[in-house]
Image (cartoon, one colour):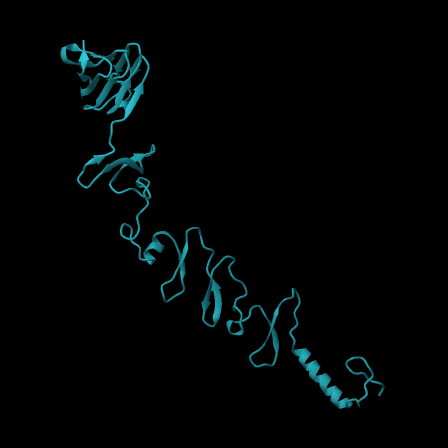
Length: 276
């Protein structure tokens, strides 16, 4: 037998093993290689020992007991659910608005809408408020005793007003709003209802009540007028009826005050510090 070498490649100094020993070791290696499975295709596969420990096989998954999932593939985007020693499973991809709901016994399921609400024990009107496009939305915070008013063209938004009503129903902050006019003519608009219109000019001024057909003030509307300048104020009406004591239609002079009150759809009464 020729020279032999150790595992480092250097000439061995010890005695070589017998041929029988070497043949036995080679036989063991050969037998082990025979137990390896033959696999062609992509790599990165799992090799496992069979239950009898006599062979190796290629597996597509690793069991839960061996630290795997027990599944070869799982739903992309699904939620994983354990099953004891059984394979891990995955839910379907959650749709918009879905939630995962459990019952304490079986696997949780994906639910939405009325089904999810029932599972969660929520009752509309008791636990939750049903959405309604006609729902009125109130302010986040509001001062004690403050009155609220509707805002926006939809009429579904409440805002805090500057008017307070105390516990005895006394109103505070409800002063009359003023509309200041400095020209020589002015015709009332619907927004003037309940206001004080100040009229100030050095020349004569004409305040005109519009016809009900064009500006439909509610019956009972009151508009107050005050002459602040030297120009005398005359109250005129477009096509309806204006009634006053002795047919007086002019304010007496500077700082005179008068009121017009709508008593029917087409008739008004003028009263106050007025003259012919």
